[in-house]
Length: 478
Image (cartoon, rainbow, N blue to C red; front, side, top):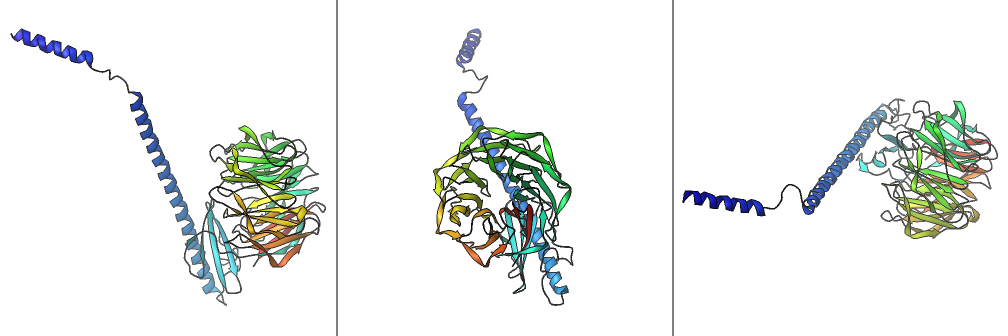
């Protein structure tokens, strides 16, 4: 009987084993669940890290502003007239409000009421503090429209037919392309006075008919669009001396007649307009070496004769001025791949002959010089979609303007007038974006000015004059 019992249990156990499902692996459903869970955990980790990094940036900016306020208040106490310093460089008994390794410091003084506003910026994140309330607040200083005053000396020599100009993000160097010479003029910039002086190696070769020039956000790379050979020259920049050196692979091909060039704010992408191909060439940038490689989709169409190109501060939108098409092409940018795609409404009309284009630092406005109509076309930008709409006042008068630049705080706009040898000066309404001519609407410059730029510290403006082979240097003043 006992044997029969054991035999029955043995049969039952064997039946149980025989029908038991195979548990050696995971089912597809189980694998999908695990993958989803891992993805969720990874996303949480990335979001958490991003949040920690952003909080650290904000804390650093706020700390720098508190230090600046302490310095400025001591300066006021030590002043015989109880006045704050008139310049950033004059603060701290002449030692200045210094940029830190991570943050850029900007200072504006209003002599009419002995007040100041100081900004701290890191990778597009800006906080400010003013003497009126001494409260640290997110965003740029309230708009202070600045006029231009010619420096002494007023000009510095370039190569033949200077075209475009750029200042390094650390404010220490400036570079101008010389179209006929096929060179870049290299300058040291005095961060106290803004004066430019030629570097020990004053020029470096480009391709023929050098046009637009751009510098990477990290200041390590410079790129030039060469209209003659249809390529981009690529350079590394020495962070100590500012001197440029051609990369081991010095150029990369474009399509026909490249004109203006831009680097994305994240430093990962480069775009160039091709005047005779009606396209944008798109490149990925190696942030370690600075070398460019063509994207898998190498180009995207523009309107007729594209010239100026601009990218929004958040890197999500790109705009191109189509000179013969009298339009602006509007693109969305994939911030992961760098590829551009048309917005739902791919273009918006301009006045005749749009030449160059800029986006305001707050991302809310876009301006295009329309030289054939002697105006600047003004647009409001939807910060969610990137789409442009004409402002209620759609244009403002200028002369035949080609170059255009905007101050770091977005309060002032300057444009070069080719035909009458002036720079137009505008104030910008921070709420509506509409430009108005300053009380002194223009300042003189040697004839045929083209390129214009403002230093990242907002203290200096530089404009190239093609017929005179010079750069005119201006300081910005309240």
